Image (tube, rainbow, N blue to C red; front, side, top):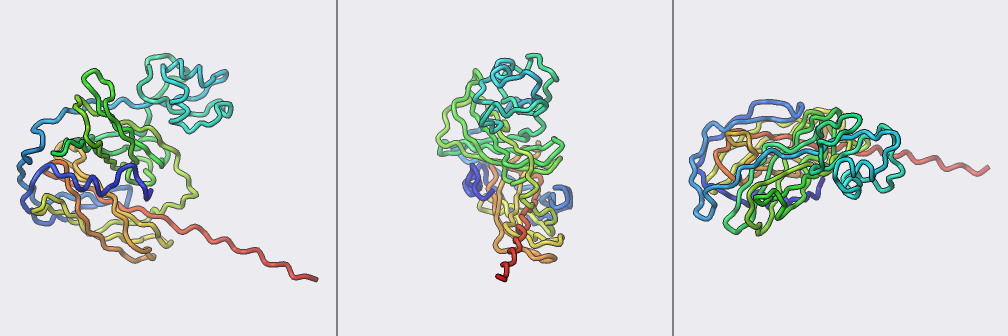
Length: 330
């Protein structure tokens, strides 16, 4: 996912608070599932809000989630759309359906959020197991609104191409501005999480924020994601210029070369909300048993940063096809 809906550097340029320096904090291993380190800074920086930053921001409410529906005998796309009070085109767009005639009995499709989920259906729809969580946002002095959070995959399979629709809502719950962005990991494994973030420039006044997954496809094994990259020796610290610095190493513990390696970091506040996100590509390839060093900065949208998660991902090279031997003329 080299191109994201959000330019990651843009999120890193938004500052909401000022910090005094804190000593380096050593991370403690946790799961992503096996290649992530979670760390806690050894000291929490003090902070004061910038004068141009609003002193209060709206509190997000629960995010409505789409539902999953299994196609039944006799169903048509128009019937399903009418049943859930959404448009057929919305269902097609979310599920990538180009020809409704190809739908199969038992095929599961996503019903976009916003429809009437109280309508009866057979079988009973279940909440979509890929959803947005830990949402936080802030308005900058220039009038932009930064929104970030993380995607949680509670489904039974890995997902990719996860797209998040971020909406600013007025007091009646109607969108006044919106933006779409991709999760900052190419593939989110079962039980995994991935951060996201976006900036809505010159945002109008709003009363609430809603984030929902608008697209999530099953993982394609042929993409050859490298699952044996381990993050080690991670440290995190706050510095004078209102940034948070993360450094560490990525080691290739597998038996295959890793290419297109990148590091993804998430900063968390006291209440578990996401305060900073970044995806940082690493140069070159990573041979088996070797390590790559990384160090980069993130500008949080709030302080204090209580903990952080850093993980690495990459790809295995595609196998090289063996050329067919040229037949020898008789």
